[in-house]
Amino acid sequence: MSVFLAKRFLTFIATLMGATVLTFMALEILPGDPAAVILGIDAPESAVQALRDKLGLDRPILERYFAWLGDIVSLRFGVSFTYSTPVIELVQARLAITIPLAIMAMLLSAVVAFVLGVYAASRHNKAGDVTVMGISQLGISVPNFWLALLLILLFAVNLRWFSAGGFPGWDNGVWPAFKALLLPAVALATVQGAILARFTRSAVLETMREDYVRTARAKGLTRRATLWRHVLRNAMIPVITIMGLQFANLLAGTIIVEEVFALPGLGRLILQAISNRDVVVVRDVVLMLAAFVVFINFVVDILYAVIDPRLKPHDV
Image (cartoon, rainbow, N blue to C red; front, side, top):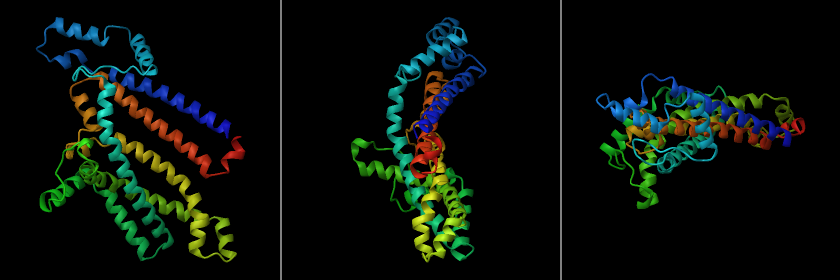
């Protein structure tokens, strides 16, 4: 087990280092002078040069990369030129919205996908299976931003149960904040839940065809007992991988939905930073998201070893 964790941790570090290189180089190859873009085409050359000096754009590329890497390792993040605020403070304020939104969407999609996926697998090639697969196909086909607009039209404009957008803040109470995030969470969870339901169904069906499942049935276990005692635990191993990747994608992919509902989350921060060519914010936030995705994969690998005991003897 320790060897398994050590290998995964080294992979985690190597992947994270690769992410720093890709993030830094992606911003370096963008056309145009960031200082000139930030200040505008009418800015005097002296002001542009002063900003270039402040951003360190005149230094060699390797020197700037290792300086940035040193700051990241020391947890010294940059200061946004647009907001004149440390990036870490901007991120913390936005994560207070984006993380609860992603968690709500993930919980909704996981519960719905688990119930529908297991139900469809237990009724393979029957009416229930066909119905669930049809609903999931529809869920995959619907763009989340279009669904978000439909939810606003129905529940905010017509029924007036929810507000059309905005976020009241957690200081005004948990329920108002939860209510403001519910419709965006449903819009995000629909596609993810549809994908996960189909994957759960496939994983359960594949596991049900294993020899040990047929042996359990031959010993007299009912179909329901076999499903809950033997099938689900092994079927959940690949499903957990998808869930981990989906949660990371939810954090990084809320830009459109946050724009539709006017939520001041991490997605809107990245979009605004790109529009303002605030390279300090873009670089640090993109690396944070990449680190989170890599960390989620690392956690999923650990859960593999916890759920599947076959990994332990082989890797110890």
